[in-house]
Amino acid sequence: MKICIVVTHLLGTGHLARALTLARAYKDAGHDTIVVTGGMAAAQLTSVGIEMVQLPPLRSDGVNFTRLLDANDNEADATLFDARIRKLTETVVSQQPDVLITELFPFGRRILKAEFIALLNAAKAMPNRPLICASVRDILAPPSKPAKATLAEDLVAQFYDAVLVHSDADVAPLSLSWPVSDALASKLRYTGYVAPPPAVAHPDGLGAGEIIVSAGGGDVGRHVFDTALNAARQDPEKRQWRLLLGGQDGAKRSRDLMHNAPENVIIEPARPEFRQMLYHAAASVSLCGYNTALDVLQSGVRAVFIPFDAGSEVEQGLRADALAQLDGIGVLRNADLSAETLLGAVTAVLDAPTRAPRTDGLDGAAQTVRITQHMREAQP
Image (cartoon, rainbow, N blue to C red):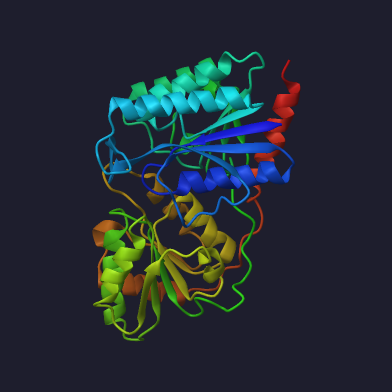
């Protein structure tokens, strides 16, 4: 089969990371796969061996998803949006995929509705119409207005053959965060969690005994890094803290912060070996995005989650609360975040019983391949 996955990450890189994991699973199963990405470059993610098509990139203005910026930090204009639509539709028409997957849309990315609908119309008009699927994580941002849920359901009914829910229906059914009607329920296909293959321990033991802090790039995790730096200064045990800064300006911000860092702190850009380092770390401090949560579960590392909750965001908080039922995982809300509370939370998880790395229920990428292959073969 020929597979086309379309994804635009606007803030963090979780959506792109999950799309790349799916793409690798399709490629490993012998399918030709292309990923069309519309977000900014994410150097910390590897796309080696995966065919990528880059649209004119966009990002949100911090947590303001109603204002999109281009690669030069200017507000995106009609010319840029037109160029994206043109390249997106030209790509899918030229590729003629057997399976088309849209990451998050129509349950999110409504600000990009015009380009997604242009894509879907182009796919629907193909002589050999592809299987069309939406791909969503375990917990969505609940619709703030009934009209948003209605729009998503109408688009699913009009264009989509299935909604691939990358979760365990017994743990986190989509209905926890989204209204699911009988019509929508009939199109849901639960795949299990989409995690990359487990990382192997780092050959040099990188990160051994450290408190590893990772909170993405830009403004989203800035307060987490600042608080962790102050916590490290006050740490009576003088444990080694390592701050891994993501984003395009990660290298510059790392250099700036290192000027005033105490001796027990290492500050550097996000590392591709991050998942390997977790196996050796004393504890992890992070937000609670989908991929980060799976990294913690796969490695078994003790963890403090500081869920992103700016504006009306509740997704990460719901996920963090569920995971906090496990040994060695704590949750610290942003409203309560300080150097003192972070030190307390880290100490608490370090004193908790050990937790074995999780190995089951994480093959959602392979299951996605099986589901879509079966559905495509069953198409008339």
